[in-house]
Image 1 (tube, each protein chain N blue to C red):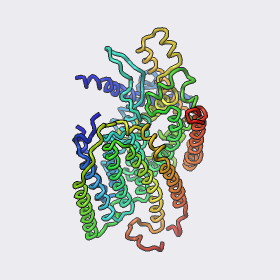
Image 2: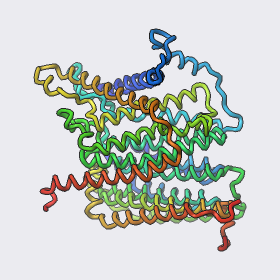
Image 3: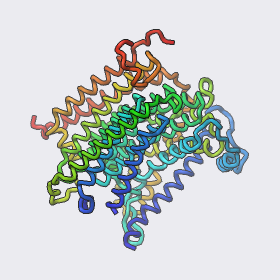
Image 4: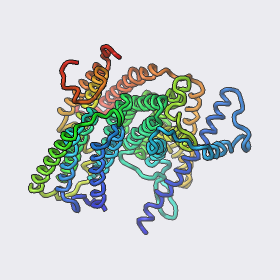
Length: 106
Length: 353
Length: 168
C-alpha cells in the first residue's frame, strides 16, 4: 500500500490547512450574516480536521482520527444550539445582521 | 490488460444492475397501478400490450415528449440539479449490494457484487443523507411556496427517520460485528433461523417503518399531500425532470427493499442451499438460484410497499413527527440496550465475569 | 496519480471555500460549503481514512449542512436581504486574514517536520481499530462528548420552544 506522503510532503497539507483556515477567518471578518459567519467557523474547524487526519496518517497513529470525531461532535452540538439561537434572534428582531446585535436589550 | 480483466466483472455487474434497476423501477410503476387496481377491485392499465404490459413504456414516451417548463423566476441551474441529484443518489446505492454469491466463468471466480466495501452499510447511509439535497434544492429552486414547504417537509421527515433507522442498524451491527454487506449476508447462511430478522425482530420493524419514511411513501408521503401542498416539492416540475423525481422514488423503493432483504432476510441465502450443494449441483447454479431468491425477496418487499400504500391512510404531519421522535427513537434505543444486554450475557466469559 | 489527485482536490477546496465566503446569495454559500466538504472527504480517502470520510459526509453534508439550509430557506434569506459590510471593513478583514495566512505559512514552512512513520499501515483508518482506541484510551472524552450532546439537545429544544414575544 503506497502512502500519499511518498509523493506529497506533509508541508503541503499544512499550507492547505493554513489557507483554508485563513479563508474562514476572512469570512468571519468580512460578512455580516450570522449564518455565513457560522459557516466560516465550520471551514476553520474542517481545516483543522484535515490536518489532524493528515498527521494521523503521517505518524501512523489513529489518535488523530479520534480527535477528528470529537471535533465533529462539538461542531454538531455547536450548530444545533447556534442555529436555534439565530432563529430566536430572527424571531425577536427580524434580522440576522450581526451589526444589529450590538445592543444587549432585545 | 490484466487490470482490465480484474475490473471487467465489476463493470459488467454495474451495467447489468443499472439495467435491472431501471427496468425494476419502470415496472414498479406498472405493478403499483395493478396492485392498486386489485386492492380497489378494478382492472388497472390493460390497453397497451397484453395485460397492459407496455404501459410503462407508453408512460415513459409521454414523459419524454411533454413540454418542458422551467419557471421564469427560478434558478435554472439548481432547478435542473435537483432531480439530477435525486436520480444519481438513488442509483449510487446499488454498488455495494451483494447480488449473489461466487460465480465461476472461464476459470475466473468473482463475486456477483460491484464492490465489497468494508463499510458498505455506512456508505448506503451517506448516500441516503446526501439524497436529501435533491429534494431540498429542487424545492427551493422552483421559487414556489408549496414546493418549498413540500421540500422542507420531505427532508425533515427523511432526517428525522434516519436517526431511528441508524439506531436500529447499530443494534444489527452489534450482532453481526461487521459493516460489510457481503459478510452480513454470509453470516446468515444456513436456513431461515439464521436470518437476522429472527435475532432482531424489533430492529427489523423499526427499519421497515423508517424505510417507508425515507422513500417518502404512503403512509408517510406528506410531501405530496395534494390537499395541503398541491404537488409537494415537484409541483413546478414537468416532463423528464418530473420523471426523474418519480423514478428516483421507485428506485429508492427497489434499493431499500434490497437493503432490507440483505440485512434482515439473508440476501442471496435460501433454505435448502446446503442440501442442493450436497446433491452435487454446480456452485454456479446455486449462485443463480440464490440471486433469483434475492430478487424474489425484493419483489415481495416492493409488493409490501404498495400493499401498505393502498391500505393505510396518510399520517398527519404532527403525528408523523411524534411517531418518529417520541416512539421510534425510544424503541430503537430500548432495542439497542436489550441487544447489548443479551450480548453481554451470552459472551460473559469474554468479559471476565 | 495520488499526487495529482491531491493537488486537484486542494485547489478545488480552496476555490470552493473562497466561493462560500464571497457568494452573495446565502443559499449558494451553503451549496458551495457542501461541495467543499465533499472535497475534504476526498482528502480523507487519499489519506486512507475511509471510515472518517464517510462519517464526515454523513455528519457534515448529511446533518449539519441540512440544518443550515433549513434555516436559510425558512428565514427566506437571499441576495437582496443580505446585509452588506462596508467596503472599508471588507478590505480590512481581507488584509487581516491574508496577513494571518502569510504568518501561518511562513512559520510552518520553516518548521522541521518529524520523519514519516517507516511502516505504512493502511489499517489504522478501519472501524475496528478506531473503535478499539476510542473505547479504551479515549473513553472519558467520549462520555463527556455524550453529555455535551445531551446538553446541546436540551438547550436547542428549550430555545426553540420559547414563545416569541410580541410576534408581528
